[in-house]
Image 1: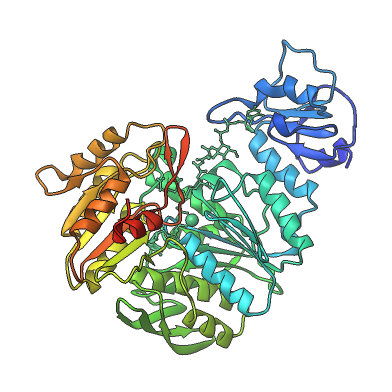
Image 2: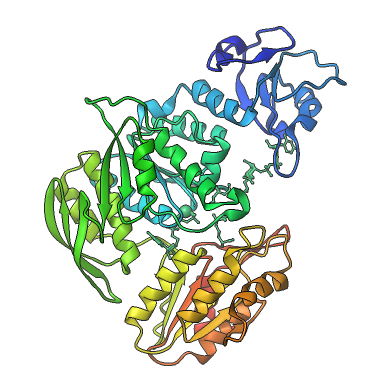
Length: 491
Ligand SMILES: CC(=O)N[C@H]1[C@@H](OP(=O)(O)OP(=O)(O)OC[C@H]2O[C@@H](n3ccc(=O)[nH]c3=O)[C@H](O)[C@@H]2O)O[C@H](CO)[C@@H](O)[C@@H]1O[C@H](C)C(=O)N[C@@H](C)C(=O)N[C@H](CCC(=O)O)C(=O)O
Ligand SMILES: Nc1ncnc2c1ncn2[C@@H]1O[C@H](COP(=O)(O)OP(=O)(O)OP(=O)(O)O)[C@@H](O)[C@H]1O
Ligand SMILES: N[C@H](CCC[C@H](N)C(=O)O)C(=O)O
Ligand SMILES: [Mg+2]
């Protein structure tokens, strides 16, 4: 594609060096630039992409897209200036890859908790309906049976649009993705043509980035505002909203062009679960929907799992998946790795690894555990470094309040001092009983060592993660593996 034709997708830009070279790739990392690349300078959180223009040119860049002029440098290739390169990049990527999301049914799931779980349930339903599917989220990107590693829950726009293009080439008909608030705020999903947008819930997290809950709510609202501005009655877009979460009222107002389908347990909703019966082995409930009713019995545990299922069922109903296919899939769901995952070595107590790393998810996980516990409840929990500090004392309080033995330990300390993170947690529970082990392995061994018959140990926060980030190092660490070794008495 020629530069001029590529740039035609932008509403305005300033070109400082004339020229119209063919562009064979778009890159945001100078190290990936090759002959024919358009290098896009991103001013990041750690370095400024504008500092790598020379490197990009020496690697063969054909053109540069930047946010400001570099007056002191003599640049001989086309140099284009826009107001915001991140947002421009999202649009360029969409256009360069031939607007792939227009050729897919695209489902975006946002919310503080339950995105990974809900996207997996949705994906299972569409697969059961005979579709080739794609999945993008915290754990991986999946295109059919192929799995690709990821760094972010919602990838950078360039990776995202390239992924959609690959999905189209692999005949994917429905793609389901997690849409993080960071991605929405930074414009990573600009250009994505969503057909269905789903809200799980909104509770506290990421205040390090968004500062206030209002900003956080607004960022998530972008997904619903993005759903088109006029209703296409032939092919309507849908907003799937949780009626039990008051933030849905705001999102109803933001979805100018979408039909709204609500789900809930406590409030009147289009898709609703009533008569919920929970046990440690599974959950049953009565499901009412605009297209049918059913008595559901499933293996997933906890009220929060019912919400995730309702969100997924509503999505499938909006996409006109046959009701029988939806019900059968829900009844056969196996759960997602690291979400309430049992570690079973035939011990006479229960060990659960769960990805609860926010106050609300920790409270939900512990409430669920407490409901079924015949013995004592132990919780092992930490808080991630370089992340929302205000949630630390709150999570500590929730842990102490909802367990018999609270054990505080390190999550991913990242570049923070692990001892200081623990002190931030402890500040919330002065005068209370708890244990502290900086070393997460020690914490797990301690709990396993004292657990007795019928007790339950909840190892919270890291779920499916197979690493621990300490400083800038990524070390091998898997809660499930360590717990298994501890149960078996291996050191
Ligand atoms: C705060 C944030 O979002 N950071 C993201 C950002 O990193 P950064 O700003 O540090 O980038 P940088 O290293 O400063 O680089 C700036 C630019 O210079 C370029 N560069 C750099 C070096 C070089 O030699 N040449 C060069 O051109 C880089 O390619 C980049 O374009 O760009 C990176 C590359 O795309 C992202 O991976 C990274 O996400 C990091 C890993 C991150 O932790 N993000 C979190 C906050 C996040 O986005 N989380 C949400 C999920 C939250 C949830 O679960 O709800 C997510 O969607 O993942
Ligand atoms: N609907 C829900 N409401 C509250 N808590 C939930 C819900 N679903 C799952 N959880 C809890 O949150 C944890 C994380 O779930 P999941 O990975 O599905 O969320 P996520 O939104 O994808 O998280 P992340 O933002 O880290 O990607 C689970 O292990 C569980 O404890
Ligand atoms: N997507 C979340 C995951 C947090 C997982 C937890 N283990 C931690 O490291 O805080 C984040 O990056 O904030
Ligand atoms: Mg996730």
